Amino acid sequence: MTPVHATFGEVAAERRIASVPLSHVSVELGHLYMEDFEAGPARLREQFRKVAPWLATVRSLWRERVPGGRARVSTCFLVDDYFSRFSTPAELVPMVLDAAAEHDLTIDYLARESACAQSDGVELARLVEDRLVDDPPPETDGSRPPVKETGWLCNGSRSPRTAPVQAMGKARPWEPPAQNAKRGHSIFVDVELWDERGPRRTWSCPFLAAVWQLLRLGLLRSDGRVPLPPVTLDGGWPRDWDELPAVVRLDPQAAPFSAYTTLSVLSPRFLPVELAVRTILSQVAVDDEVLRQVAGRSEGEGVRLEEELVDRISYVFV
Amino acid sequence: MLVMGEVHTGLLQNSGEISESTCRQVLGITAGETVRVSRRPIVHALSPERLTGVDCTLPAASRSRVRGVGTVVSRCAVTGGRVAQGSSYVRVVRSEADRRLPWSHYLARPGVVEVLGKAKAADLAEGFTGDPTPGSPDGACLNLGAVSGRFLDLVQASPLLDRRAPFKIPRTSLRWVAETGEPSIRFTLHTEQERTLRLTHPGPFTPAVVDLCEDLATHDWLLTSLLVIVERARIGTTPGAAAVARLAPAIDHLLHLWMPAARVEEWLTPFWDSLERRPGFTRQWRSLVDRVRDQVAVNTLALLSASAETGRR
Image (cartoon, rainbow over all chains, first blue to last red; front, side, top):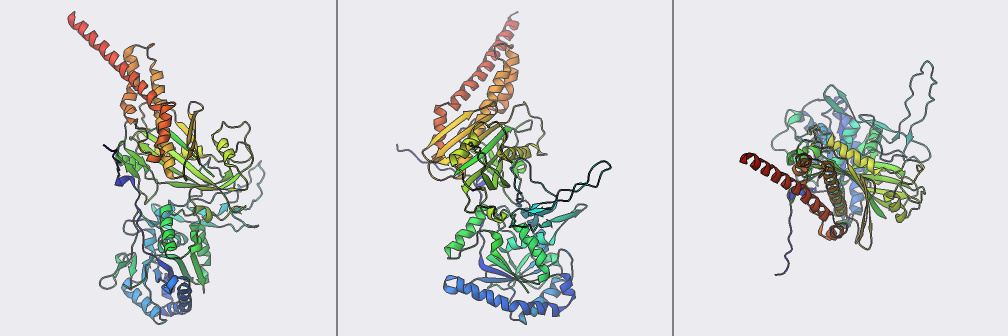
């Protein structure tokens, strides 16, 4: 008898990572906070007026870049329902859509900020927190766990603590913090990720914005599945934010929500937030398999992606 | 250039073996990541992988200063609900830049440590697996043992374990270096608890090599532990019943765990096979197991004849 080659497999022993449909670019047309809402529809119209030419530019840039000119561009809009609750979806969403339409803008996807913390039993923020790998200062050899200030993340070494002067002791002079990858001089950034009052943890705005970027880049998985896939809404807009799905698809024909790259058109007042977001994102270890999936797909259609994920994110501050 | 890793192996700090579902909870160290479990031919559970950032000197036999920056991959495993492991490794490659780059560059290459400046693979391999040279090297030197030790601690500190292990047995550590080339394997025992492994495999490195090293570490620990237990039983100098009582934990907790090369990919099994020829892990294991069983048999016979004796009186 010839030898028999046996194959044996166990599903529970394998890692299965779902893939996600991807556009070329996801453009964030705006981010609505309570203060913007209170300022009235004029503020929104002003925002969309500024955004419109940039969206047109991005579309044409990608048409040139993609073989055959078939660029997949999707647009999204984020409403803050995490830090403050205001209005209702039924009242607010039509107002936003109307203001956008005035400038010939179509919002393909609408998302809730609180979904970046938790939604549908998936705690996206925790998921990302567990994937943080601290940027090690020189002389980090693994012998001790990384020095952490609970709830904070920085891009270098903090200033040594200067203790109050003891009766007999000498005051220790101040020493500067240092950025790890400095070029000549440091730009030291220390970001608060969350705070806790009692049992309730409040994630910081930059942390949720970092989760939002990862979601738009299609780089998150929960137990191998794609978290918070966009949902098409049947019937009208609900009267409560909690009844609204995390990501709503407004145009059934829209290009996929997640994309190889993202562009956010923002007011310059968000500059410090985005510096913090980039500080966080440059310390998130995305799953190897997910990175390979995205790289393989983009190469397959002749699009060369930046290796580092922070380089896939761009901004226009207007 | 080369891959280096270190595996720490120990007895799970629990009175009995833990179930598959407990294994999943104990090893669930990352939110949203599943614990991989295989059930044949022995239950083996593997945690998700985590990364640790390092920027330090790499061990070099020549004691030249070689700086490496990147991430260490670590994971924990539980075999047979009884043997716990913390395992870490890095793939060492030459950096294209001569300075440290932004951290996102290194996170795009998980598990890779980039060497800034000149380094020879042989020098690093010798430095990592050789006996430590006297005098501390300049600056902090990559300590994979500490990282693996912390991951093993993470398992052992789980609140799901009762911390009442049936016997005390030291942890063992296996440091390994894998390179591409003509197939060869060299396993060296250093002190009581320290082992090194030099492996040259055909073709490029794959994580299957790590599985092989972890499998060898598990079996070396089993063999070491069984030897310790047999030694502690002081067969021949202690009364039979007392010796058998000391051997009982091995029967209860270790003897069924021997499954060499169970999780090793086919192309790597020749490495196990060659270690089976020399020094012959399974040969020594069988002889020890026979010794344990013979002691039990002899003691049972003695008990039987004693009770028959009592019956005749």
